[in-house]
Image (tube, rainbow, N blue to C red; front, side, top):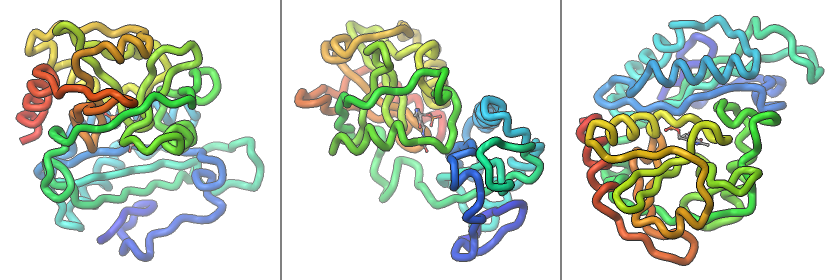
Length: 278
Ligand code: PDD
């Protein structure tokens, strides 16, 4: 396996960054998790835009531009990967030992990839593997502290949430008690045929899978509402599912101690998503 580190492909065992890298020391970095289907990165433009927005939120002016896509494609090619998980990170790099950042003239740019067959690991169909989910105490932090809309290396929010539960996903509320999102996924639920998801006005990551699913729902003429919802709205839903790049559309089979049926809307959207990436 070869990874791309600062513009060079290196054997995975030799791939390393400095212990003084600000991404490691302070989480001063942005990243994207991407998926390749048949050798092509799914929704590249959306991922590139979100990474750009993250770097702007952190004032990491890295100047990598289109070269990142070239590095990702090179990584896939060098490893002969067609269906793959790809993660690329851009950190502010190594700088003199003080917290106040200087210009990101020498960012650290890493691309790692591994095989991820369509339909999930071991050929299991991820969209048919219901997830357990639990509402946890850890709150999704509001925008004016850590930017929830940016995909930074600071995942402690999600890590603290996951530490609270054995469920597959930890669902967080925002500071006002409205449903936000999972530790690494966006939340959808269906009630009386209407698809609901927390709106981007709350502290959630603008998931790319979320956006694709909303587009599919529109095409399929499924009524959609986005808004601020309470846990009770989720508890009385008919069906619920989670979305992210690796899970795609993943039904929720259990919320806290209650079972959820895998409903028609979830099945139809999962099938439409699967058709899109075939
Ligand atoms: N995470 N919300 C959070 C907090 C996330 O970390 C993610 C994705 C999502 C879904 O975004 P998308 O559909 O663009 O993958 C929502 C990825 C999978 C990760 O942590 O690697």
